Length: 462
Ligand SMILES: [Fe+2]
Image (tube, rainbow, N blue to C red; front, side, top):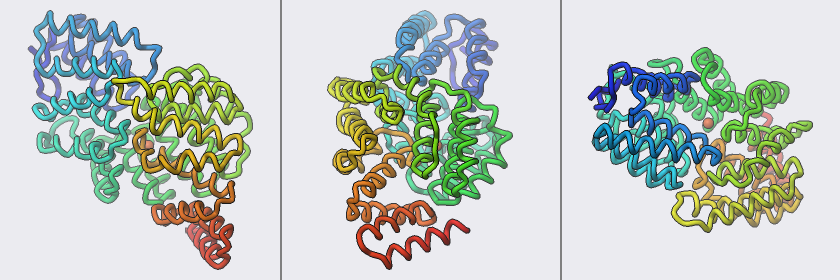
């Protein structure tokens, strides 16, 4: 029996194997590019290492790519036989049970197993981070916050990895609207570990949600050396920076970031694709000609129309397809989302059925100019959109789409209500005030429209 870096019993053949495992976990927590190398070294040191097999299975599932399902199944079988052969601990077996559930699509069931582990082992950072992922894609901000809060008493500042826990807390606090506490925890996490990209990202969310784009850009510039060499998650942080530039009306800078960073390597990864789609739509909506940039996104989305791993991903693929004019592929994706919603036993099925499928319909309708239909699809589900997961900043894409649809449909009463909500949430956002002004003007309130446009102009110069 070995001990891992956090003091947990680890059924590994040697101290060397345990060390390579620790390096793998550390690389994963830090979104580093060398995770695969460390995992290979772990297996070289101990081919029958149950937790290493389990971790490998988790990594496959994190790609959200059904093409990896057979490899996940093989890895799960390897983990199970290794656990039996080495008489793995209860904690390790619970991890493997979580992997089994997740591999069947029961991410909520897996999250319950991780929470069970954490109740006894608050320093099991893999259970914590994967629970964080699960709560994130369940769109449950309170669980995101509370899951980390529960384990904090089991940590002290001196322990390695504490910064990562604070970074997760910061993000949970931010998503649940406690912005001041989120900023404080995130900054402290980055002070403890300059390369903690998740904590840097949590603070970027703080700036996004509270409407300080210039400070957000400064924050990302100041911390860039620590996170720029991370894995593809860095593209998502660049995405945040691009959003700040877009809010400031710096369209050239936004488009340059899109080309060189957000879609710099044009990968097929779901998060990278989602970043691209969500930024390109916003850029185009700001009146910028984006050329043929939808094509490469649609080419990749078209290969994934049968995936339906997460409704969040489906919605972004649906946009790529619709905006590139791939109507039949978009239709196939929407029909598949409905069928996925009828399946039993997966955590995503009810989300596909109640939110994902109507969202795909709303997107397709918007693209063909049927704005009233977009409103009809989105209005009943807008408060349920959290259920597709992702962050408030990511889902804001669909809330923006609803507002713009109302303006384009000349449904100014709806637009006025939605825009009034938006300026309440984003009091410092010039674009929100411009949309409010447009809605008020359309509804015949000339004086109100002038006041809103004046506020937009005032904020834009701050
Ligand atoms: Fe984000």
